Image (tube, rainbow, N blue to C red):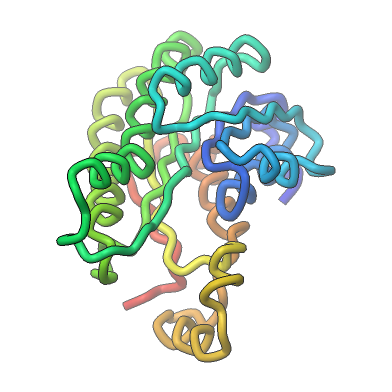
Length: 250
């Protein structure tokens, strides 16, 4: 992937949920293109693993709880002071806790939305002024196909991931006049470390391939590739869209 997008050489990028899985792959992909990347997560050890020996670009690991608006604001401004404010913002962090909706209390509901939805809005609000001033930028939000496929016991996750699609479209309309593009990627089943450790069996793999038009296992790097394209000059007229990367589940 290195060198495919010369426009990212030296570009400033901000990625949340960077300590593992899809976020780790996104950070490494941008670093391979020579970008200056803020990698944000609450897991300091995971951030170290993400950044160890990867990429030509500069990297700034930041430990932060994205559910704390004040801490998120401070982290964003610290990143801006050290690397510059981002041309590309990737809102990736999330968590798919599974519980029947009757067991979810009001506080747990709000906590789920804080993890899976709120920071997309908060960081977009922080990033928009500098993107406007600098003549444009790209925001890529990570949604999911889970709410489209009616996976069970994920009511709060479904609400948040569907909300990301709506937020993406709303922000695309408001920020478009300033040449800030806002898109989303909705992954299907992706072979993250968590999936490999907790779900992957020969039966699960066979089921996954049978569900998809393409009988392949989707890797985090496949999602990162979609993110890079959406953030690139090649997608300069693409905004308000949700790109599904699920191998063609029907």
